[in-house]
Image (cartoon, rainbow, N blue to C red; front, side, top):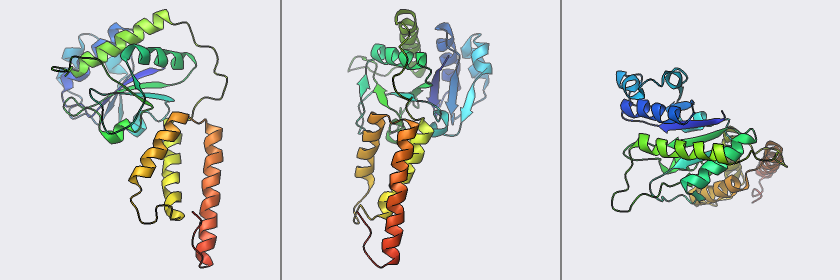
Length: 248
């Protein structure tokens, strides 16, 4: 199974166990923990209620970037809209998209944030899209394991009802790790060519991240883009050495 459930900065170990039980009842077994506050802990086993095969396969990651590095589709669960402009799916549509991607052979991650604060903006930026469970406005706080159960159920339905997707007509999108390396290269290059002219780079980098995440370039396309960035950096170094203003 190419679908994993990623719990970020989980505060209560019981929620880890309950999430393990939730995904096991729907036929899933891959659970990744990003910097949990308490793990291992007896409450994990107690709330898992026998989902031992899931507990045995739990993976630990130091941060979200590492947890989804090989994924080509990353969906972040959020209870409310934040200051990050992302495509937004309802749970059923997200499940269909995730199952179709998995059927093509892509690694898929569903990402859930801390019980109190949810996913931070910097974590949502690592996602291709956001998923919101349509709870009522005056009492919209789902327990973490309940949110995991909702998505596991929708994924189960989508897996039973949606036929396998046809082969992808293009190369698969770059992995999350490749995208993060590209964004790092892009940020350095914009500084090298003095693109920002003393202004804060935050806004333009956010917009460019949104653009390239939406485009989902493949690995070969990223290599071309990074080649362009490297050439721009070489030109900037030559201009600097000659005492000329950098291109930009």
